[in-house]
Image (tube, rainbow, N blue to C red; front, top):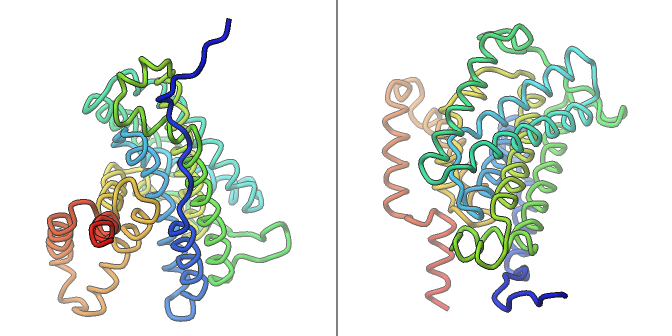
Length: 326
């Protein structure tokens, strides 16, 4: 005997034309950005933008606040660096290995952490990430505090050398846009609609027959895999993998990026990541060495002002004001 699905079952949301327009404008701006901005900085910023977008998939659409996402970002960076330098793998295979490693690790961490909710979930992810950090500190493959340096960028598909910063940037841009499109597809699928339903009212989702834990595990794994792609790309761009990528402050930084840009929005984390990355560069240009000792204080003041003035984040607040105006 078959049972009809509940009429209140979440359905996939249709993408709005404004979202496609915003994506097209973003892609066009990023395509011409190297004409005015140093490609190395842009490529690094896009890696962190993809990391923030991956984290937003978990916290913004699933309601799961992880304090340990640096584990996947930094761990994948080590895998990509090891594959490219020691195993002499081409960049595309190194990134596939890094993404697969982070995704598998994310499924394992997710299976352990989703047994608890709220702050307990967050603390478990932080504890597991710190375990990974100290493992990287002691393991001989990671070279401790020195990290893995001099990672070769190699040739894409054996043809296109990525040693040139501009070529590397456009490769990272392609990865970033593909990752953003994948997140967009996930969010606007029935799976994404179910995640939002779980975020809004988990008890109701359970009563409707959803396997909440299974959805959370998959969401955690997808977010970790995309974070791993970002970490692997960052290792190739900077040609290094260090403990900084796995430190708990990296997890805090990506949370800040998402909050500043707008949690639960598609382009908000991207803008937040670029904003966080650009602030030190701008302050250095304005104040030079005189600002170096005050950099952390100035950055903190700017972040506090932004959070107080834009409670939904930069993009979230602008979108809310636009809806009120219309």
